[in-house]
Image (cartoon, rainbow, N blue to C red; front, top):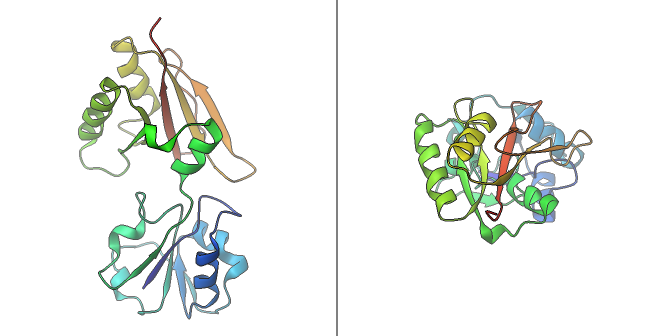
Amino acid sequence: MIIVGVGVGPGMLTQEGIEAIRSAPAVYGSGRALEIARPYITTDKVEALRDFKNLHLLPEKAVILSTGDPMFSGLGKFAGENDIVIPGISSFQVTCARLHQDLAAVSFITAHGRKDPEKAEREFLSDIERGKNIFLLPDDAFGAKEVCALLKERSIPADVYSVEELGYPEERIDKGNPDRPPEHISDLYSLFIVLKQKE
């Protein structure tokens, strides 16, 4: 199979991804991924997937669409040795561009879908103590309120951003701080924590 990252929103597909989609005999993906790729799909064999655990059962030349970048908490984790993974523009990249932050100066942590949200919390605290800015894929158990509470408890000054719907007209970035957690409308949001110098 060929796993193609479609980017986080319209207009963020790479040329390599577009070519793979155009030549695909069959295309599979989430509703959102299919919508992003729709202008480039030429086959009639298009199917929305809800269960991604059986991707290995799909036809060998099938294209599976992954929102963002497949290797950034995406479907790339299901790729076999002989599968092809085509990168896409991730929410991490877009957020860093919007906030003018160097990707190399940021730690990435995912709490989303983890069975052990405490592990994400430990990683968060470790990276914060090392002075790293953090991009976090949150979870119900570890989101904006929990992050801000940890920062406040430790008197760590930071700007805390909630980012959602990146690349869409509804794109929204809300800036908060440890005293006022940023708000989010969607359940699919990310957090970006930028440390400030202590006064």
